[in-house]
Amino acid sequence: MIRLENILTPGRSLVNVPGGSKKKALEQIANLIAREVPDLEMQDVFEALIAREKLGSTGFGNGIAIPHCRLKGCNSPISALMHLDAPIDFDAIDGAPVDLLFVLLVPQAATDAHLELLRQIASMLDRKEVREKLRHASSNEALYQVVVDEQGHGSEKHGH
Image (cartoon, rainbow, N blue to C red):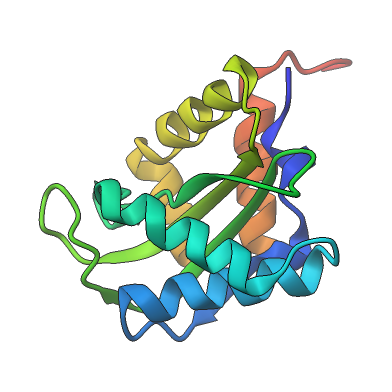
């Protein structure tokens, strides 16, 4: 079982990201990932995310988007999380602008385990209290910590 905190890093969790537009936000994501994951090219990530959005918006409602795609050259799942400084139009299913972006990139030969990750992200963001914690996180580290804490809830706590 792949856990979210193992594919997300504090360095790929950003608060106060200037949004602007859907394209700009995806560009920011691609830049961030290319900077953090030397094997991946910004342009490859960007084009793969754009191509996925053309199939249908990854805006899931409640101000959340989960941009995701399969990516050549990606060997294991990579996640990134951004809270934009202002919500942007994302063609979301409920029409609401988006300010939380939880990104998932998976290898070209994606498996059920990777689909499971997408479900984990979606069900975590489905919870209002999680969204509020993410929106109130004041630093990159705090944003990352929300995800780690939430993942912890699903598993047994030892020694308590």
